[in-house]
Image (cartoon, rainbow, N blue to C red; front, side, top):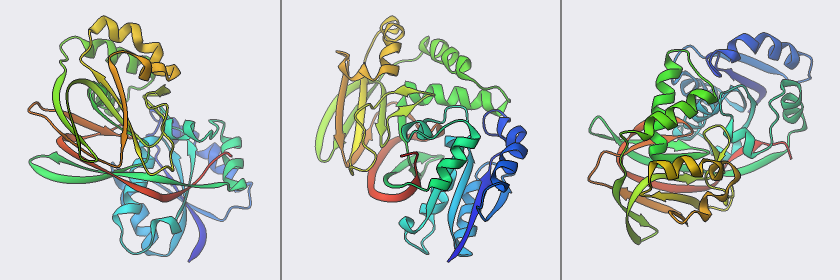
Length: 308
């Protein structure tokens, strides 16, 4: 096993901020005693390919310089390889994304010097990982996620935001704009939820399945989520009026959304979701495919470096 750290850098993260700031970050890393090799991603899914490649070469220590999307790609590389146990790999992050919601959960600082100090301290935590099956182009696809999966309105806003990212536009104001614009014309969807064998039928506006608590750049949509308890936490916003959504936005940030009369908070290990309507999915902010969905928790399967 090689002790060198592999640093995977996404220069497009944070609307290009990562690429602009990488020379500064690299200089700070060079001042430490970390033995590392850095690689810049060149295309979408490149981080996934790189993580698999370096694991095969014997590397077990990885640092992601980027955002939630880059983390998402790296953990999919880790979990799609079959050579070693995933808990043998250690994953750290220097957050330079737009939302940085996974890092927010674990108190990892946005300041580069402090984030690097967190890596050096090396406090580790073994968290759960989610696995989801979904449909894309009439094929069943599997994907792993480390933070939150969103469906319905949440996934639609993520898709609009990702479309803007592809055009080089990013930021919280654009995310809010997509929320308000998206409300007009969006409709709820009827769904059948099978949670550990218990069936629920309901009309859903939006739904989140969380390992961690934050998404959308600081929204606390699954405030009761515990990252190593082996259980998904679900927040289901049922059919709701547009102005009620706007009025309730502060509750998404302070975690009180689960107290709303139109919201259900549930939990489970295996979740199946079916609908007659076209329902889209995002995980860790990345737009994927559509229903039906099958979620399964993989308990305590990823070793990460945290701030405490």
